Image (cartoon, rainbow, N blue to C red; front, top):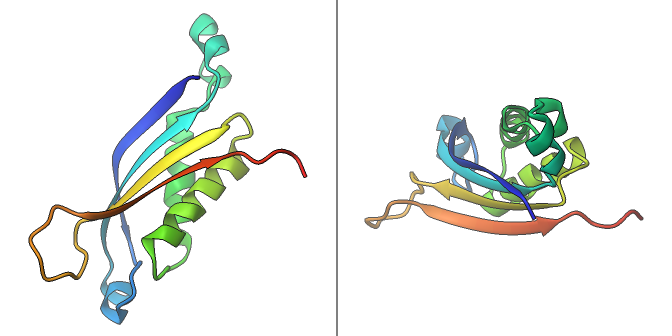
Length: 123
């Protein structure tokens, strides 16, 4: 099982339960591990034989900023869905979505949710 990792992708978006979060927005950080067979790319040294992290970043950003969600759980799920929809060779994703500016009166680095999803078999 091969894995490609994107760490701390910073995206400004408008997710949250409070109205000011949807109006003012805030920074989020996303870690994504996606699993794909990269044996062919290892031999060919050709970007067309892998799932390009540059393309994955574009898909993540588009999915994450397309709508405003109350919950980071929902936003993470949308990112996972968009990766599967865009890249048929990806068979598993692990996403950690961090919210460092969560409106909680406490001293913390960030609040986060981590989800793991696997591609479902053809219906």
